[in-house]
Length: 399
Image 1 (cartoon, rainbow, N blue to C red):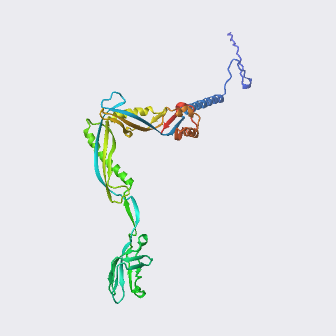
Image 2 (image 1 turned 135 degrees about the horizontal axis):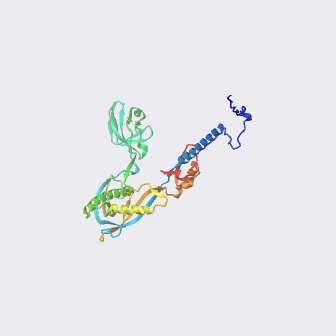
């Protein structure tokens, strides 16, 4: 008989409720999902803030626009002109001189005048309404309606029922004789005849006061300058033609040797003559070399923290100071000016000064120091209103 082997069954305990589940003390506790979300969100916010901070620091800036004040810088010096210069500050040149004379007539301009009293004159028409002729002798009186007395210049005979024209003159000199057209009576006639014999003027009388042009001392002085300029231009052409070579620069000095007028000041004439003789000295020089010297001296006078807007050698003024024609030497006085403004290297425009300042504070500061005539500041981003602390983000724009 076969015997069955009986295997005992192993019983396994099954936990059906979470409350009864036992935890392993060595197993880490599970982190809820919401905590992961909070950590991720915090990290994102920190990254965004960092990016915004980097973006702000890289883009924030202030541009300070400065309307700089201008100061005129001038250099004046005496340069030596030699036929053979030996120093860098000397200029190659030549000295020549000559004399010219001329007589010229000038018309009085009438700018100076005087008023004199004279006898007013005019023309009248004498009417005769009588049945017979009326004779009037020279100097017969004619009285105007204004009460001014005139006289006939010549005797006339006025025909019956007709008229004649006659010249009359004022009995007294002066402005009273300058009258408008009017009617005249003849006081020398009887009262009855005055109604029939009378005179009438159709034009105003003139000549009671007249203005006479006189030549003043100022007009004579102006004539001297005019003729002197004419002679100087002629002398320039003459001396340029005599020069040994062509020079790019020239300065002239003229001296009046003799002058003679045909009249005295205050004379009543329509024209007068002037005879003038002048001596002209010409100093010819190398203009480019002189300009180079002048510009170098101009920069020597430029202050610290300044720069020139523009140096124009064409504004250089040269005048003859002294000459020695025998030795072919001359001294010339040179003047050159140029406007200068504040430069970027000026301590007044050092960017560190403006850190943390507003536009108004910067403007008040630079205007008070005389550095600028106006100041404007452009900030970026738009919400920024003070100069950033990053010095390399501060820009100076000089206008």
